[in-house]
Every structure is written in C-alpha cells, then in structure tokens.
Image 1 (cartoon, rainbow, N blue to C red):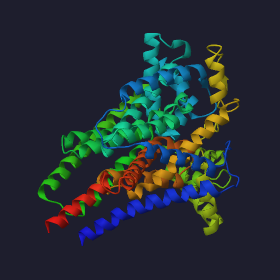
Image 2: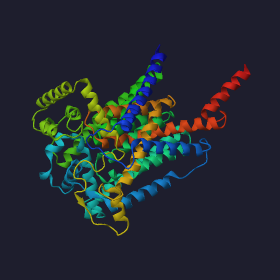
Image 3: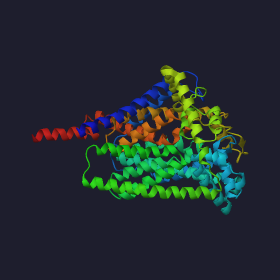
Image 4: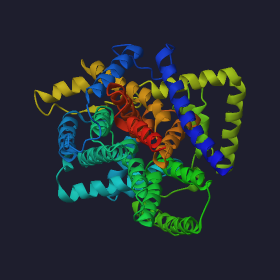
Length: 527
C-alpha cells in the first residue's frame, strides 16, 4: 500500500509540473491580449520557439556520443572568461536608478558605512524586513571599498556589481556541475551553461544591486548539496550546510527557501516507503541540527541589524497578506500597486493592517468570480512568463543617471544593445526571449526524467516558485532565482531526447534505452 501511495505522489509531482509549464507555454504562444508590462519582440513567440526548438534538435542530433569521458572544454576557464566579459560590459553601461527599492537600499548602505544613522529609512526597513540583511551586507562592502579605495569614486557601486558578477559566474559553474553529474556527460552541461549565459550570465540585471542576482546562487547551492547528499558521504555536514544556506538565503530573498522546502517534502514522500532504525536516527540528528542552528542564526541576524543603527518597529511589517492583496489587484494584473502600498503603510498596527488586507482580498475575490479570476491569472501569467528579459527596464526610473561613455567604441555599442531605447536593444531582447521560450518548452519535459530524489526536488521547486508568484505579487524578475532550475530541467530533457535520437539512429542498441533493451535480451537468452 505504501509503495502505491509513493508511486502515486511521485507521478503526481511530475505530471503537475509538466501541466503547469505547458499551460504557461500555451498562454505565451497563443495570447495576444494587452497586459501590464507587455513587451514586443522582433518575431512572434511561435516563430521564436520554432527556431529555438529546431536549433536544439539539430545540435542534439549532431552529437554522436553523450557518454564518452573525453573533456569537451574547461568550465573553469570559460567561467573566468565570462566574469571578465561581464566586468568589461557592465563597467561600460552601468547606471543608477533613483526610483525604487534597489536605490533606497544602496543609499542607506552608504549612510550606514559612513555612520550617518540619523538619516536611515527606519520605517521602510520595518515595513519590508526582507531587505534588512541586504542593506547590512552592502554596507560592509561599501566600508571595504572605502578602506581599499579601489572604486570609491562610485561610492562602492562598482564593487557590488563586480561581486554580483562573481556570484553569477560561480552559480553558472554550479549549474554546469549539477547537469554534468546527473547526465554523466559534459556535452549537455555545456548546453545548459550556454542557455544560462544568455539568460542570466550576461543579463543586464547584474548591474542592479539588489537581491534578485545576489540571492540567485543560494537555491543552486542547496540543490547541489542535495545532489552530493545522494552519494552518502558527510550527510550531517551537508544537512547543516543546506539548513544554513536556507536561513541566510531566506533573509536575502524569501523565495530562496522554496528549494529547501521541496527537499523536505521529497524526503517526507520518500519516508512513505518506511523508516528503519538508521533512518529514524538520521532524522532525529537532522532535526536537532535545525533546532540548535536556527535560534543561533536568528540571534546573529538580530545583532547584525542592530549594528547598522536601524530601529526596527515590528508593528510596521506589511506582512505576507500585503503581497497576496497586491497579487490580486486588477489594475496592474497582480503587479506592484501603489494604492495597496499606501493602504498597508497607512495602518499603524499589525492586527488592524491584517484585518484591512483580508477585507480587500475577500472583496477582490468576490468581484472576480470564477471566470474573472481565471482571466486575472491569464494576464498575470503573461506578465510573469512572457518576457525573456525578466522585465528589464520596466519598473522604476531605470536610467535615471547614466554615466559618460568610458570609451569611444565599446561603450556606445553596448549601451545601444542593453538600454531599452538603444538601436540594437530589440535584437538582444528577442534573442533572450528565444532562449527563454525554448527553456520553458523543454522544461515541460520534466515528466520524462528519471524518477529519483534529485528530479523530484527539481519538480517540486518549479511547482513551488510557479505557485508562489501566482499567489503573491507578480514580477517577472522574481523568477530570476529559479531560472537556473528551469534551465536544468530543460537540459535534462534534452539529454533524454538525445538518448532517444541516438537509440533510433543506432537501431536501439546504444544509449540508456538501448542498454535496457540489451539487458532484457540477455535475460531472455539465459531463460
């Protein structure tokens, strides 16, 4: 009975993940309605996806053997090249936006670094506690920059950008290693890394000093640790690492914890098979690690924030219901809505605020009705998923302060490529859209992956981020932390398709599926 329940739940995860992504793809491909933040590209989505799919299939067909041990490149060297390319590109095009959270945080980080605590935005950080940790980290980096005097002319901005680039580069290496170990081949890992470079490695979001890019490495690190956990070595140390990363990742970006919740759920599903004494002992030790470490980390975090000079008023916290309320607003299809912000911030106590938020949520759901709510989710889907740039240039006064060209050749060209008013921007955004649509389409193939713990966590993480953004405020850039997970799912799907193509080409005698057939044939002969 337990095995049947386990099999059902396992299958349900993969089916649900595939269905959700397939629905998203259908909406992206066949909806032509207007919605908040809509972007246009040089070609229709259906054409871009067709081109992307054709290129992937041809590339896979051209690869002869995916299981050979021959090295096909040096990912470390490629990562260094990527970092240098990032540094040069972003040095030539970086700018300052004065109109949204990223600038508020950077300004207060500068004040903290300079000891100007009387000017800090105490109410803002009390209202949005999820930004407290990032302002502490940035203030340390600015202090470091002021001490070294390397980038002090830009008040530490360039140093933070370079650190974000370094984090993005390392995240790409981790993604490569995850795919390589899963498939036991470098070729598909290079496929995934190439998609990563286009969508994230060279994304303009690396310039925006905020939690999206800074926090992206955390879910990948947790997933990589979980993959290493399957080898059976250093399990308690790995669990300690995952718990630690989840706590601090949550403080950077709340969605970072989704992958850890997926791991816990996957382990619970695995327990349905039964628990022996050794597993019970392991579970007790892991629980003890969490019980001890989390209060310690909470104390450290509190001390960190107090050291900044910020005076936090817990009653000012807008709370999760604020994000649910905003995610239901019809004006911006679940996106940022200033009226909702003013409502939440205009109420002094948590209890009164939650009551008002619940009333708005109930009223909006009643106003929508079933068909209206479906229509709302439809437009919300387009707002979130129909943009391979992840809303680059959309929110805030993006290019408020643009610096003079650093040189006469590269800087003008790169600005025309990255700036939304640039002559070549549509080329870049269209390429990013092509890669994103192709990634989404292939990630829907997660249903054909091997049903093991690793793929289970991957599927649960994707379901988690999809549902999170549907429930709460919608922004395309909220996807950034989990875009690598979509890329991994797409890459693994490509791997299985390549195996299938190889099997068909060689008459079913090679590849994973061919090996299975060989094994069955041997059994028949023995009989």
